[in-house]
Image (tube, rainbow, N blue to C red):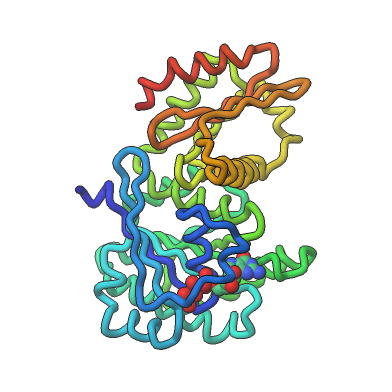
Length: 331
Ligand code: GTP
């Protein structure tokens, strides 16, 4: 398997910051409430996840207790940090050490990442903040990408969340730059209790995908041919958004659409699928209608689902037929 199709991703951060919780929700379909029972990760837990187009994600969940962190940064440094595609670093928004020892460890991880990937020393530090999943794609080929999640934002009063994220971003950016780090620093605010987790991870996963632009052009073509208003592609296991296209004719109306609609759909459909599994009735497809729109969610390829939203002058059966006809082109 080539290094292009195999991506090593590190999940790091202090003990209790929520790394294993995220991994369990996104990749193992666990419910947020069940993460309270998770034990501390011992050393490193690695898992392999298959995505579309033969992409394999090697996810290394690195235990965050001080003794493990110290060993990741010393004796295990080359094993952990070499050939890394992306580092996802989790900070606990409620930690009393957020701007002291937590950031100190983070800067050490950046140093180790740079030391173990000397050719690509101009590592890009990436962030979100409501951006399109496709944004991560441009960093391909520029060395490891660093995603920073300020996590457990549900514990921060809503009115303070954006200022907390902005202050944290400014502080860490300044300190990373002073430590010799290059590139922009941006951050994601996340919580397992809402769709922000899906937003951030959708961007991470889209960043890992080598052929996102060709996928987008296929989707645009499908949107046009089927006269749809919007088309969204989800990864099958995680239900993360991989790509989406909105018809130019809907641009004005789409201004009023919920900006977090894709992540909300991910969360809802995942919960619905879980319910279906519990009653041993496998989920296959879903059709919803409102006075103005019809939405059809169906399998597109063995690794993806497609959601097609169309004005309800178009019959659901026509949308279903178009999806069926499109399958060979995406397969
Ligand atoms: P180590 O394995 O020791 O490195 O810890 P970890 O980073 O993997 O932490 P873990 O995922 O085990 O989570 C610790 C606790 O944080 C659990 O009780 C989770 O339920 C809780 N937690 C995780 N994410 C969130 C979140 O977004 N909000 C809140 N309030 N709690 C969270």
